[in-house]
Structure formats: structure tokens, C-alpha cells
Image (cartoon, rainbow, N blue to C red; front, top):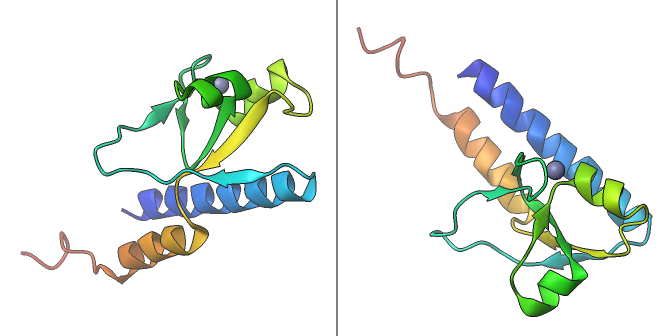
Length: 113
Ligand SMILES: [Zn+2]
């Protein structure tokens, strides 16, 4: 549980840092949202799970086929990310709320016996 919490916090911080870096570099982050049925997103190139910030090629975005890349692969194929749009699935407040909900849940396994 604690390891998971730590990972979640790390992911949130990474997301936030990446988002700020993108905005600072003049890259637009477009709101995309996420439907409940939508499966997790994976990078088309390296198949890593892409969380929250999806790097989608301009072309596939206009066709709405959404060819998703992770930040690393997007940067490798386009230095300034000029061929990519950045789609955001969660609002930062939502992510923080998810995190808070996890931290508020007491450890059940230790108290049940
Ligand atoms: Zn990748």
C-alpha cells in the first residue's frame, strides 16, 4: 500500500512537472477528458502506459484516430513536439483528489484480525 502510494505521488508529481514544462515551453495542453469505459492508454511505439498527458500526432488528432505516444517517444520523433498535440485526461485538482482519497483510507489489512 505504501509503495503504491509512493508511486502514485511520484506519478502525480511527474505529471505536474511535465505539464508545467510543456506550458513554459509554449506548448498548448488541450483538454481531452476521459470516459469511464476508456481503457488505459499505451504508447504506440514503446507500449509504456501513458497517464494523463497523451502525446498525439497532429494528423491522427485531426482524424480522431489518436495515435498516442509517451513523452519520450514524442520527443524522439519531433524535437520541439511540433508534430504533436498534448491531450490532458485529468484535471490537476482531480488527481490531487484521487490522491487524497487514497491517503484517507486507513489500512484495513492490519486491523481486521
Ligand atoms: Zn513511448
